[in-house]
Length: 287
Image (cartoon, rainbow, N blue to C red; front, side, top):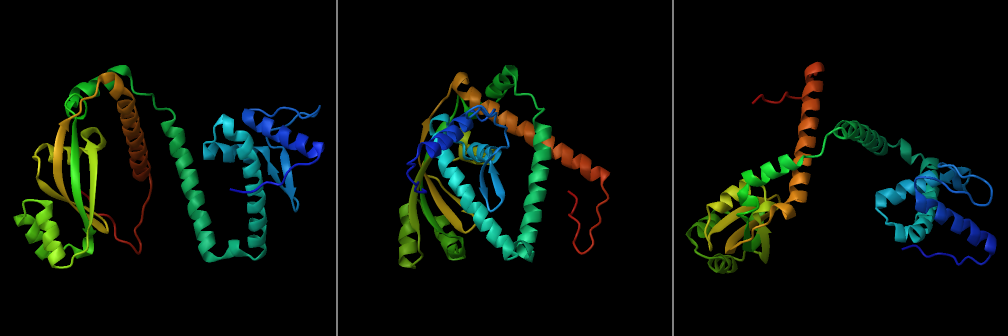
């Protein structure tokens, strides 16, 4: 957290207070004295470059600062933007912005921002799921709601590179995690113990389908990149949820689903209209 210089004179205090009050409103800029403020009005000039209210408001929005904290956050963000402007100017003076790596990163970020803005404009037109849609999903998926289960799971976590054929055979013949951990102790395989609880409504559909077929005490393996988890179901509990409590989660799920469908449809449409030539790359295999 940045430290702040104490404001000793009334003019400085009035200026900072005005800035803080202006930014709390976010939507409009109020007047300090008799002069009307505009959204882009400069708050500070750093070697000729202005830092505006608009920039501060954007930083507040991105940081998700609530109303009660905006006054303090405004001061911190203003000083941070001054620091950033100083560093940016010095970097450009040293032509850092002209290095291949930075230029490539800038182009990538620019392309991503513009593409995301376009998709956002498409999905902004999507209607929220209706009550009928939400209730229909609730009724059709009892495994997530009225028949929801909680799985308490114990784990042995190891590096995927250590998951040998010999360990796989040991797991296949074992009846508990303790048997597996004893085998790994004997052959000096490093591992860590863990435990977690998950509801079926929090898990991917494929995982829920697999867990429904398993019994208490059953072992199963999950690979996640560099780590692999050897799991044992310690307990299975009923954990039903009502339609009212499930509604917000269902609404968000259906909205995300609609968003993905709109994005996928637009990409499919654009691909069908485009001329795509694979030059020094292999074309994807059609499924």
